[in-house]
Length: 78
Image 1 (cartoon, rainbow, N blue to C red):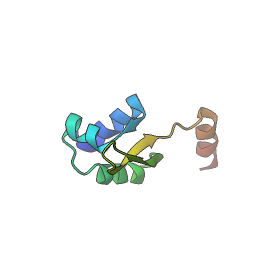
Image 2 (tube, rainbow, N blue to C red):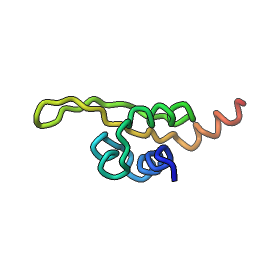
Image 3 (cartoon, rainbow, N blue to C red):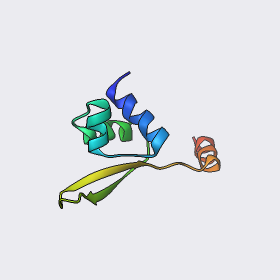
């Protein structure tokens, strides 16, 4: 399974992912690059900036769940 697929499956299962989770669980050191690939493939992912207890800033990514009827309407427009 590719790193991008692993990140996508994690987002589907848990909703969010942080760089620390990506590094420790999937050996992904460039999470932003994987998120970029997923966005290019059409996933709606929002970035939230967080602050660690030591003051360091980091991004947390959240997969946005689309409403089923909205997905249906978007397909009908094509």
